[in-house]
Amino acid sequence: MIHRRLFLGLAAGAAALLSLSTAHAQEPLPVVASFSILGDMTSRIGGDHVAVTTLVGPGGDAHVFEPTPADARALGSAKLLVTNGLQFEGWLPRLVATSGFTGETAVAATGVTPIAFSEEEHEGHDDHEDHDHAGHDHGPNDPHAWQDLANGQIYARNIVEALKAADPANAGDYEANGAAYIAEMKALDTEIRAELDDVPAEARKVVTSHDAFGYFGKAYGIAFIAPNGVSTEAEASAADVARIIDQIRDEKIRAVFVETISDPRLVERIAAETGAEIGGSLFSDSLSAPDGPAPTYLDMFRHNAGELAKALKTS
Ligand SMILES: [Zn+2]
Image (cartoon, rainbow, N blue to C red; front, side, top):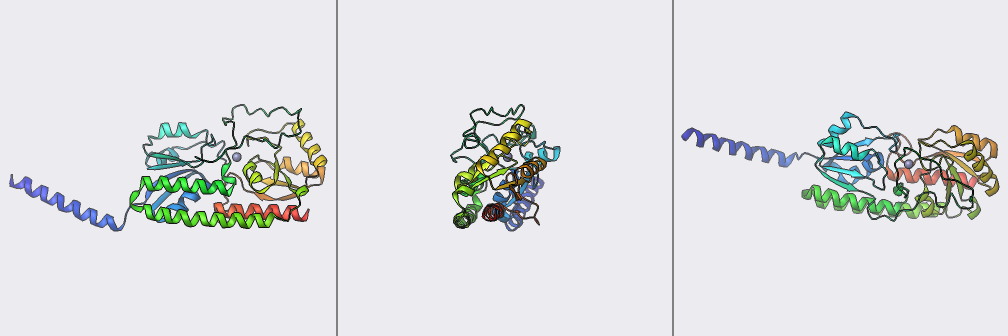
């Protein structure tokens, strides 16, 4: 009896010591983000309180990602999963099911007003048949909602709320970091509008190799025309290419942008046949490496807007 009491007393003392030491060096909240843009947003809002694992890293293609066993292990031990939603990450439900993940899921695009795929692209093309996206599991709406800084603010608020719920002890920091981040997004939005303000209406048309800029175009008044349709998997047919070349000539499109995650040969051929300017790279679904031109979500916007302004003002 005496031995047992002594043992219990020691155990309680050890537990008290342990909790004292962990109060100073609290383990960061393990969070998984589906792709690099959400990873950056979550790191920015979570700061030192979170340890973020990003599944589809810089340069990766989140449309066609194949998770590894290491990804499943990271998700299995995470407390929070941050996803885009709008059926962007078609591979994610299976990963969640196999990983043993028991945490909460934050859908960052919750609350945005979705836009339908390629509304503007199909205008005036009555003979245009929809691209066949067989095997590509997307919904009726364009998932690239982060390409509008107003939506970025919605994403940030959703991530703030999810972090507060998962880790209430640091709610004040998440709130403050989120507010500062949203203020930066608003300032950058104003900056980009000013930068693009003097681009003439007739010059506000570009061609990109990946149809990911519908939200950007709607926000900043630029028409993006994509030869590849809506998916990085779908290759344009010869008829698609001929149609785009005709459209560039008919509508006097000034600039063609080679994107980070699609084969650039197609847009280069179009540029060669039409004389349109080839602009720099626009980042759509992925950030650049840390030493590249778009290592964060805000850098990505600054970079894209700068490339567009440069091409449309000089062409
Ligand atoms: Zn995309």
